[in-house]
Image (tube, rainbow, N blue to C red; front, side):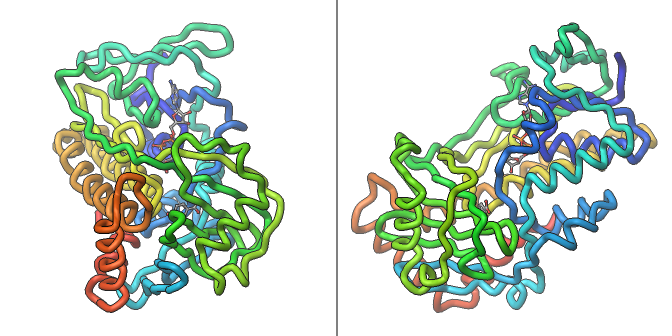
Length: 389
Ligand code: APR
Ligand code: PHB
């Protein structure tokens, strides 16, 4: 088998890239380890920056997002019952769109299928070969048959644990990492949201987040210790703790109900440099991870893929390699700024097991400053709605 661009991974990065390139007549094959059903059952965040909704619009995928997505002109930071409103619309003129990552993936898969994009689901033993040579290829097993796909370029869109980044020799790149000493316990339930905008709450017991998927489906999170056992958290215990951390006023509007899903995820900041090795280009979680505070993961995948698709289209249209040469540096400049914001918001809003009274007062002072300063709120707002491409 032969194609122009072999794409490893059918998460948002791989699916966006495949559709953007296919629309320009560039040959793509996507190789995904999981089944389509598995990919569409993963629960992920869902706050879209304008650059991400722009990408959906560019692919003609506005309809369902415009109908079902919720435009949010602001969000709240809360400390022990005191709410600080970050008025995104007034401070930046822009909104974010609350639309689950799973829905984005569903729209991208539907489009790919309609347009005849080649996606190999449930591929095993995926391995990269000759990535810095003239004939890069990807080998894999599908339906019990070993296959090899040769390509001009390989796009590593296979997330943090995928094989693409591992194919880069240790001497040719470096990872920068911060692992946080806690996780997020998430719960999804078919209950009305407690508020019409998201609430990020800092409480003595730890961080909590009130989010949503629709007017009848809510998503909440609680900071928990890393080694916490999910079985120790009955639905009732989760709702009780959310009520404590979000405060009485918010809790008065909180509907409780049976969980559809609950799980604990660790928090990590990670960046790999550079995002290119030979003919291999990394995009999305394959190259970087952000803690979910601020919901930047999907949006960073969107900015990487915008840069990478432009670069590949430039190359296949007129042999121009300038975009490909600039890709890593351009993508990383935006990645590090989103990393900084996610790390800042994580440090501001969580309880760290090793920090003491001094650090707590620093957090309190920062939140007091944000509450009283339009300039501070604007800094948060412009990062939250997403920095320009
Ligand atoms: N072979 C093929 N596919 C693989 C392999 C492999 N060995 N390993 C992983 N994959 C697939 C995963 O199954 C997944 O579908 O690569 C895909 C990577 O998707 P994501 O992890 O969603 O990463 P990305 O597309 O970059 O999207 C980033 O998604 O995971 C969230 O928080 C993340 O919001 C961020 C966004
Ligand atoms: C979510 O709705 O899952 C969500 C929202 C905002 C975040 C993280 C997760 O910052």
